[in-house]
Image (tube, rainbow, N blue to C red; front, side, top):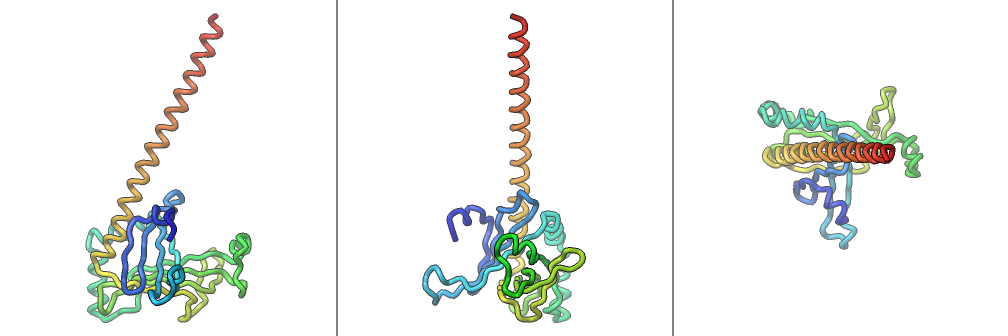
Amino acid sequence: MTEEYNKNQIIRKDARGCFVESLCDFFEVGKVHLAFASYDVNLPSGQRQTNNIHIFIGVDELQEICRKISCGELQYILRQKKKAEDYNTPLLEWLGGTSAEKLAQRGRSRTDGKSLSRTAKLVAGRKNDFLFSADSGAGEQNAQGLIVPRFGGDPENHVSVSMSWASLSELFLLTKENYQAWLTAKYLKDMMVQQAEQRRQQSSQYQQAAAYGK
């Protein structure tokens, strides 16, 4: 990854041959950026990444996820899933992507002409607490504007990160703390800019009044 990309990194959680990281580069539009990647250390340096998927979560969803983590609701649901041996039904799920129209506008149309679907889901893990997975592939835009996956069980990219309760909590809670810090800094910056503009206008008015008084 580039140095600039690393500057946006809040936290990264690694598993065997893969990782998920949280980035702050979309805070300005009210989104949390989760990047999933897998790699093969046997490949040449600079060519080791095998899959890469980007998921964007609204900050309102982030707040709700953190509430479920903090109050124990998500942990309770996880215990119920494991007790029932339900390792398929998602505890959390996201659907997103880019429409065929937008891909064309960016000069990145797919060869099949379809939209690009990106999905992520959190399920109970068999060997660890969770599996946090992301997939991407062909999709279609429905009447509501949502990109629906059309790749069935054969995505073009797939990353599945095994996570403990602690690592998942750290991923989301630290992201929330960073967003709140960013928002506070933004409010402070906007206030300082507004005050500076008010002082500039007042100074201009004083100068005009002084000129008229001569």
